[in-house]
Length: 209
Image: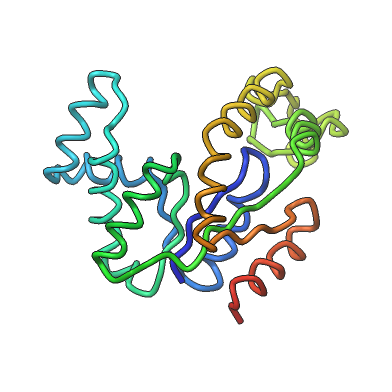
């Protein structure tokens, strides 16, 4: 099963990816992980990517596509993969499709974990973290239920920051969602439910047993 994972920050796609990895042993591949691994390994593409990263510039699409293609040929991806954080644009999606077609490994689905933005805002702005042990709780937790430490709100969970992240996501990802819909690959799952119910729906929609 070859999957591209889509979803706004806070929609719960990371949680669903983790469940897919646990149950089906599919590698969860993010562009950040790939870049760090390639740079550390000193591969030709890694060296090229590092030159852009060191200069504070965005790594070009052709380098990212090359890294993805390279990573998907690793043994652990032979039975499938979950791509997270890439593609980010319809241009990248077209390039990815071309490379996957060349490898004979086309996408099976673009899985969108869909949650209303106002629900996400409420979800993230109510989140609190323990400054001692890192426990994630809610605004209802006066102190950490695990260690008794003070709870605080992270900067990226403040409403203005959350709304800006969602606006950026919507601007960049809306065309991508339309692209995969046009390719008849988009699978949309309602993410505003219990995690287990969402996962059951993911399995059913992807025809996974």
